[in-house]
Length: 129
Image (cartoon, rainbow, N blue to C red):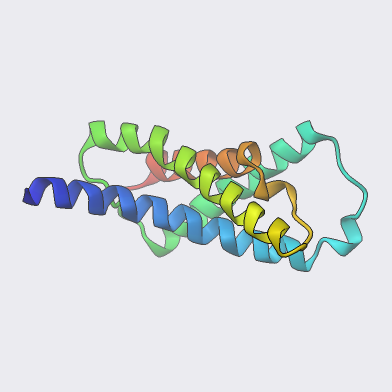
């Protein structure tokens, strides 16, 4: 039972870290979106979110150099699972914003939230301790 609790805590830690950085990124992008009103090409936007996710991963390693998930095989599973959950959470945030008639950004959509979280998770997996 203790193993299951520890396993869930490790996955939750990685997931929570990705969500925190995505929400901070969303807040930051909402605050500076006015100069960028023209919609960019979706492919370039995707590359941009990969870039920003990688930067977020590097910053998160500076703050939390150790990975929350200890087991190597579970780290690989976390690399697949947590970005998917983070993308889904960004869809929920986008739906919440839409229900309050607030403008949404690309990060509020699954694909862009997933790309951001996947690149962040990959940097953490590759360079984390």
